[in-house]
Image (cartoon, rainbow, N blue to C red; front, side):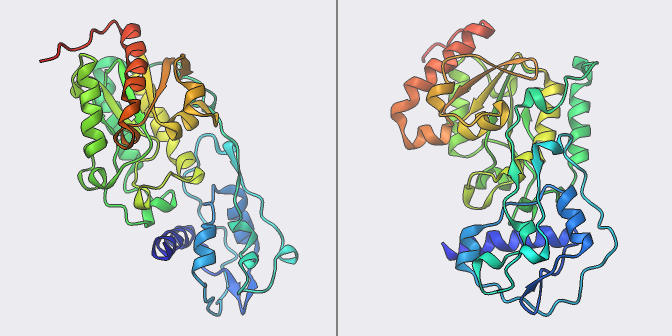
Length: 322
């Protein structure tokens, strides 16, 4: 567990260094210069890994100082208001570098506010025509590039897993994040959970090639952990654009994490399933993540009820059993 915590902590440190924040302590005293405060005020900073800080003793080197020049900030999420960061002054910081409470205040958890995808940004005034949607998705992928906007870029990521399927699909599935198989292939839902999702799609009378599949985050969280708010809130701008380009009639949120960020509410699946929600002009249904169904096959019948609701909306008939 300590190894996992250390790996995650290192990823956050590399992320901060990429933004130009290099030195956190001077002889055990937190460094709070104007440039750091400016970055903290304008940037969606990562949540601290509390367990990592408790498990890994950070030996702070002698700081050589932080440049007073303004540090370039990565491209802001269109709705930066969803996350605000409060930077405390040096007088409020504990000077004991060996104490857990001594970490710089700008590493404290940001105050994150859940906002639904419907409220993140208004719908585009002009929608992408069907013949141009493949090209429009390619533009979004190019915009992402070799993304270093959040700590996941420094946590051992191999591939950016953008999305897969029909750019004109009537049905879109949104999961949580890539796993090991997806990280290797660059394609969402290709592991065991992906195989089960394929079976679910086929049972609905469709082929995988006829739907569109994406995730809340496009990089694999270490050890398949749940994405941190800073990671999801940084990545959601691209998923939002994908939904707006594909313009599905129905979106299916796979699991609690996908439902939470798409709908902007933290609620149990039992409270969200069985009824329609709204997402970017589409109807949204919530069901279990295929990975959960692999762990608890008894819930497959409940998931099938959710899919039958979707099928009725789309006029689909269940595939004949061979």
